[in-house]
Each structure stands twice: as C-alpha cells, then as structure tokens.
Amino acid sequence: MNAREVALGFLAECRDDLRIPLNAEERAARPGEYPYWGANSIQGYVDAFRVDGPTVLLGEDGAPFFDRTKPVAFFVNEPIWPNNHVHVLKPLAKTHGRWLMYALNAVDYSPYVKGSTRDKLNQAEMMTIRLPWIGFEDQRKIADYLDSETVEIDAILGTLKTLDQVLRDRARVARTRTVFGLAAGQRHGAADAHSPLSGIPDSWDRTKIGYDFTESTERNGDDPPGPLLSISEFRGVELNTRTEGQQASLDVSRYRVVRPGQLAANMMWLNHGGLGVSSLIGYISPDYKAFWISDHFEPRYVHHLFRSSRYVDYFAAIATGVRPNAQRVTKTVLDATPVPLPPLDEQIRIADELDETTTRVDAMLAKVADLKSLLLERRAALITDVVTGKKEVA
Image 1 (tube, rainbow, N blue to C red):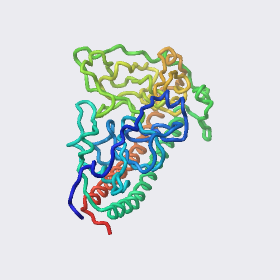
Image 2 (cartoon, rainbow, N blue to C red):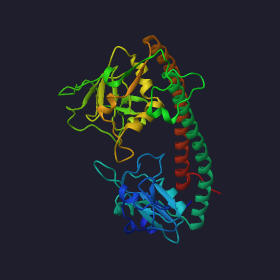
Image 3 (cartoon, rainbow, N blue to C red):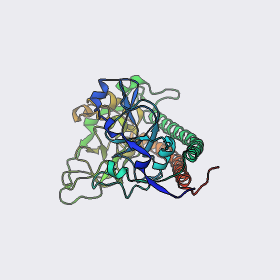
C-alpha cells in the first residue's frame, strides 16, 4: 500500500456550520423521524434535518478518543440533524465515506485532542489529522472488507449483549421471588409496583423504612475514613474508579460517610437500582444518603430486597421529577415505604441462597464481559491493521 499521508482537509470538507444544538425540551416539542446526533450516538428524533447524503460524523467533545475499542467516527447516508458536539465532514469526490470512517477510527488522537477538564477535538486540529492516502477503488475495497468482517463481530457482540441481559433478567426474577417469599409459579406483576408486600407469606411481619432505617448524619470533616465510593445499579456500593462522570470535588468535608453494613442510596437513581448495603468504608456524594439498619434485619437480606425488580418498580412509581433520568424519591416518601420483615433466620437463609446465586451469575457475566472485551479489541486491531496497510486486502 502507498505509505503517503495527507491531512484530513485534503479528503473532506468540514460543514460544522450546519450544526444547531437542541436541548431536551426543544427536541420534545418537535418530534419527528430524523435522527438527532450527538458526539457518540443518536440522541433522539426531530421533525427536520440539517444534513443529507454521505456524511462522516466525528466527535468534538465527550467522545472516547483514547479508548480504541469504541468508535469516535460514524458514517451516515440519510437526513440527520447534528448537534454541536459532533463535527460534520462531507467526503470529497476522491474519498469513500465508509473508508474515511474506518480511517478516523484508527487514528491516535493524542496529538490532536486538547483540554484540561474535557477532551476536545477542535476544528483546526481536526483538519490536520494525518491519514493514509490511497486511491478511491482501494478505499472502497477496504471499506467493503471491513464491513464484511465487522458485521460478523458485531453479530457476536449482539448475541453477547442479549445473553448478558438474559442472565441479569433471570437473576432479578429469582431475587424477587426469593426475597418476597413468593410461592412457586407466583410472579411479580406490574400492579406490585404499587403494593410491594403483595403475596408475601402471612407469617411474615410488616414494617416501614422509617421505622427500621435511621439516616446517618456522619460527614467526612477534615479526615475522610476511606476512599470515594459510588453506587452501581449492577453491583451496589463499590469503589469509584471512574475517570469520567462522577468525581469528588476538591473539598470533600461535607461528603457523607458510609460504613460497612449501612444502606447507601442515590435518591435520584432508586428507580434504576441505585442503592445497596455497603461492605466498604468510605464516602459518597453529599446528595446521597446512608442509613443504619436496625437489628431486626440481616443487612445482606436488605441488600437483595431493595435491589429486587419489585422495589425498583416501586421506587419508579413513587419518584417525582421532570427528567426521566432524574426522578427523586424524597426522604418523607421513602420513610413511608412498606417493607416485609421475615423472621431473622429466614432472612439469613434467603441471603445465603441469593449470595450463592449472585456469585454464580456474576461469574457468568464476567466471562461474557471478557469475551466482549476480546472481540472489541480484535475489531479495533483489525480496523487499524487494514487501514494502515499492515494487513493487505485482496
């Protein structure tokens, strides 16, 4: 392959002038059939378009520039409305659009991306990106080859995604049936979202969160007892190891302390399973809450109970808020939440059973995740090798 390189400006015209951002309310006011694109994906659909024909979209900010397993460039050939977080590139006559997409997904962006707090690829730097220069027919062959190869990998990734969801769904069904003591064949239904104690054994007691869960007022002060923790909808309370998203501020004195055995809750994410009993000591956002659990409860049972699909649905029903991803459950409403109270030995038995089930499911999910990672690495390496000429295409 010809090793000559050229700047992106030699291959495509930048049409960022066609971008217009629309906020969520503006998009909701004009629903339609045309995709509204952001940095990494379609953000919704609107009633008009700004761009049509073969187009390559390249993230400006918020794109995963330094994760080679995730795409930052996308080829579209339909009417769309792009926002201001994605660059709009129109391939020139000598440039094959799908090849350009693959080439841009094989770039090392470290010389081009700037920003101290948020990675950003500005227009001037973008147009200097160096790409291999080959003839149009060779570009087409590469694009066709990579289309064929990646569609097979993507099909396997789709199967793995389905398997992941099936495992999680079955685990949730098993958890709900077990923590509520439901009889064989008795299933959680939509109506149970408004009556979480429906179908529990008559021999079990009933209580409310406000009776047996006491909010902790402990804050970090000048001496945090441990690291920053986060609350995952998949795993509960865990170490915060993210490089993006929620980060602690410089002053963490007002952050809430969480201790082992306490229930920690993100009050704006309860409807997604954003709570769990901690096995760690550390601190969480001051907007979250931590609760001491009374001696009437086995903490492990509480962890499985409130992360069951029945309570996730219940929290969704009692939450309030304008935005779908910001539905808050107030402390007053949470305190009134009815809770089953099985005998303590029954709670321990249930917790033991679900701990074992969770361990098995987590092991299977880990294998699925490992295979997914290997496939994504293989996909990224294939694209890079073909685009750079390390792997020849017949």
